[in-house]
Length: 236
Image (cartoon, rainbow, N blue to C red; front, side):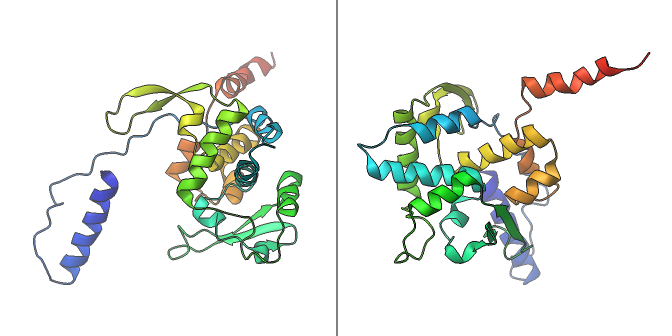
């Protein structure tokens, strides 16, 4: 709902600037604060389990599994992922400009290609295809991800916020997995390792002061313990 409010507010401002209307219905109406649930993501162990899952009897799902793992290595949005071609591979890096920011603040994002991503590119290399990888529609890709998670045994329960009721509910990971989980996973893993938002943002493409970044990173128990343990290292 907030997304619709913001779009309508922008339209009203445009109409006022053009002198089409004079009344601003948002003058006394405050858009409520966005509410998000605690983000969930994959661990390195989950990724390993996903990569090793035997999908030999479902070759088409194996392809989409590879694409999802590749997306975890790159961390881009699915809209950018589908636009990648071999031309985006420069000096063993993926270079691209995020579609979300290309009009307002275009910036080339450079992501080094690790061994896992390189192996996937080589496995699905096809000169006859324009796209870097054999993508399918967004909806089918998300459905394939859910099925792959189920076959790989990634079915643990996670707590999510019901977008309609606002109440927390417990759902199996495979039922709610989607392409954006790959972006959250890379952000979370890198942040837990390096604990530097600006450094991680240089890979994921988040703005330095991005409020979205705070939703993707997960301050888990290990990080909390590490932070307070610094008090044990004082000199007397």
